[in-house]
Amino acid sequence: MPSLSRMLIVTPLLFLAACSQPDLAREEQAIRDIDARWLKARQLNDVAAEAALFANDGVAYRPNVDPLVGPAAYQAFRTKFQTDNPKGTTTWSTDAIRVAESGELAVQTGPYHDTALGPNGDREDKGRFVTVWTKVNGEWKVAHDIGSTASPDTAPAGWEVGSWKLNLAQSKFDPGPPPLSMTLMYEDRGDGVQVYTIEGIGANGRPFFNSYTFKYDGTQYPSPDTGIGTIGPTTNTYKRVDAFTVEITARERVSQKVTQVTTRTLSQDRKSMTSRVNGRPGQVMVFDRQ
Image (tube, rainbow, N blue to C red):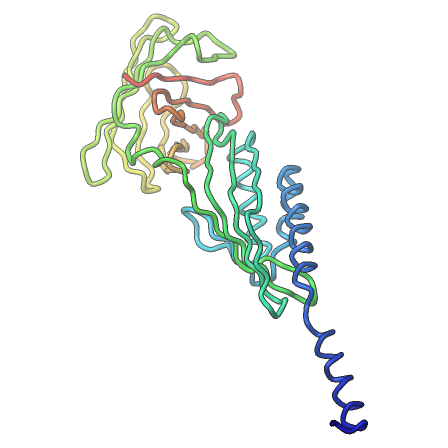
């Protein structure tokens, strides 16, 4: 039979041990509450509130970019993402949250769904995510966040190669008048080299034509006037923004002043391409694949 003095020593220790065990159910609910705030911030486009949920060394992994380390990097990425996807919306839900016995680490998994992506809002992405949470000064913060798409393969590399005819009925020219016809042609010459040709009939009834070679490598390529008077002697720089979008930046050859930025975006069904010019909301050209 244990002595009374021994019981007086052991009992408080057992009580303290029991009290020190974290309440895992309560910690799980705390994460669910923070995650609800995150989703609300996303839907309100509050990038600062989103970024504040990350630990100082928290990392987000996103396609086609280096790991985003820290709140500032995440906020900059989300700000650009909103600019590139002005109509975009996001939703996600939680399948499970598993909290470690220590109560200091947790893993959350579930599905996500992004809709109205791209400049035209005609793309979507869906998949699954894994978020690792860690305790920082008693508060749950994001340590790692990664999403894995389950959507079908995106547009193939070099999707623009081929012939594209201007669809006047679906295009906008404000101010006008529009050209009578226009056809764009991209030819793949291998090693990343493409030959771009534009031809058609202008609003004045005169034909126009232009053809030159380029790569998506950031180099400035000469672009003589097509004859329709839209751009004077310039250079064009080409880059791929994402799997569905290319961007062409025109600069004056001498002053290097940017005169025009054009984005061309492939539709979700791969059958049409939309061309928009920065600063000209009234000019939207839709081309059908031939």
